[in-house]
Image 1 (cartoon, one colour):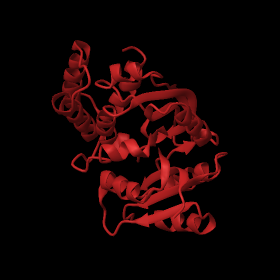
Image 2 (cartoon, rainbow, N blue to C red):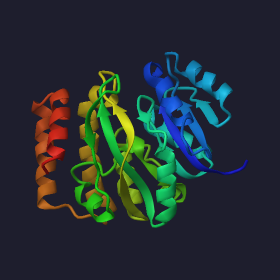
Image 3 (cartoon, one colour):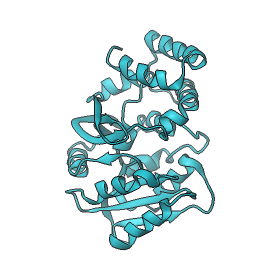
Image 4 (cartoon, one colour):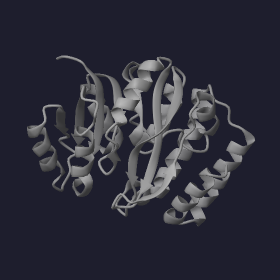
Length: 273
C-alpha cells in the first residue's frame, strides 16, 4: 500500500456523543495527505455505526474494531500497527482540531528533523466547546524536560510523532493502562528532542464523562508511578528537589482532595510553578 505523510490515530470507546465533531474536524483539515486510523474498542453505544458512516464517505478513514474491550493502551498499539504515515498525529474522540492543525504540524516536523514528538497550545473548553482558558506548553526541548516530573510537557491529543522514533522505543507500554502517554514521552525522549509550537492546535473538551474526571484518582496514581519508574529505570532526566516535593504533595493530595477540585487546582498551579 502507498505511504501517506501523516496517520491520524484515534481510539474510541463509547464516544458517540461527540464523535461526529471529532471526526469532521480531522476530515476538514487544510492538509490533505493523511489517513485517519480510528480504532473502536468494542464500544457498546453507537460509536462503531458512526465510524462506519464516515468510512463509507471518505476513503482516508481506516477503521478497525476490537473483538473485545482491550482498553486504551492496547487499542493505541493496535492502531499503530496499521498506520502507514511518516508521522503519527494523535486525536481523542471528544476533542476538536483546528482546520490548519496538521498543516502546521507537518511543516514544523519537516523543518526540525531532530524533533521526534511535538505539540502545541490548546484551548480548555466546556462540553459545548466554549473556551474556558488556554493552556500553553514549553517550546524548547530543555524547558519541556524541566517540567516532565511535574506536568506532562505535551497535550497528548495535540501531539504529532515521528513514527520511526515511536518504533525505536516499541510504541506504548501495555503494562501501563493509564498515563501511557507520559511513559512514552520519557522513553522517546532518549532517542529524540521535544518541542511545542506556540500556535493553538486543538480544543480539549472537559465534561462529566471525560477520562480526566472519571479516572482522575487512578490517572494520578499511574502518573506518579510512571515518573518514579522513569527516574529509577529510564534515566536521562534530572529530578530536582522541587520535583520531588511536588510528587510528594501530589501523593498526599490523592487521599484528601476530590478529583474535580484537583483538576481546577492543577490548572492553577501550572501558571505558578
